[in-house]
Image 1 (cartoon, one colour):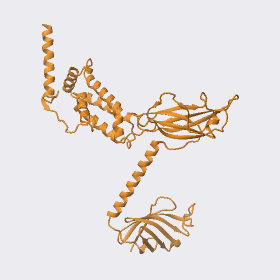
Image 2: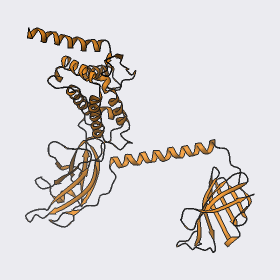
Image 3: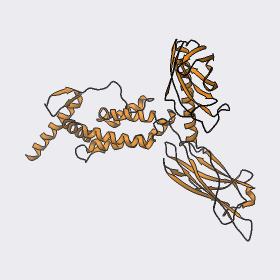
Image 4: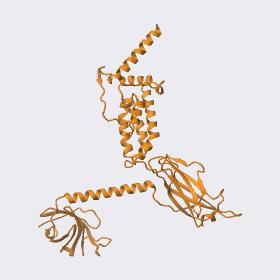
Length: 417
């Protein structure tokens, strides 16, 4: 009899849960009314470039796919802006897992019961865990999958930056009384990219052949933000310091193609072999890492875009009439001469002169005089009495500001014609 009741109860639960999913409905705790689930037409969980991959993801995440969709959307955005948002791949994945857990907790009681029970019934990997546990276990699997397969997606989207920065180099000439001296070079590096990578250190002789590689067999893994140190030496090899020439060559390499065996040199360090014996001494090395170079490229692109925007605004803005002519001002008459965007002017006070450039209707530049009430520490055009100006013109007047020396303009200077 007890077995019969248990069987009926189990059938009732399975029937309710199955009906809930087949009918695509959600039971809300507050009023126990049945409302249609509001499904988005855009699904963010799964790869964009593979229908098979998206179907596999849908099957893998079932029945939590729609629940996880907001976290997937946010993670896609994090990946898509990785080279500009200052985050790392690991940070995107950590946020993704945290968001998935929050979505598991934020569900209604009916969703927790229906989704988690149905998930445990249909998915063996979710068996044996309590309420909300099935959802979080599935979240763990989803976060693992993104961490495992997300790197290739970043490469395809050109958001992956594999980079190591050399932060310290030291070398020691080891005295050998019985034969030729030896050389040991130690290099400390920092992973300043946005993905974990692998690296090694290579010592070359003067013919460019490898003398020593560390690690010996497998390259060393280094996580984002992590520092590491390796040393290469002629000791224990068939070479000595004389085989290196006057400058030894040490190369830092990284694995920027995880699915291939090719290594990419990112630092070529020259080390003088004629150095103090048996004492580690620093080696000067200040060159940009791949990440530094990438940031510089981004900076140049941004400056170029800003310049193009300014040029476009200049071309599309109403043409400003020339300000050439004599204007009456609060410091006496000013005679302006404008040629293109270049402006020169003179005024009687202190044998004053103005030079500047006009952008749209704003003139920025400098004034200089033989004498004034404040003398600058440096000369401009051979005169120590000078300051900044900024005038804003319309057709018949200007409102401006001026200052002494390199201070920002704050004093009023107005005029009209």
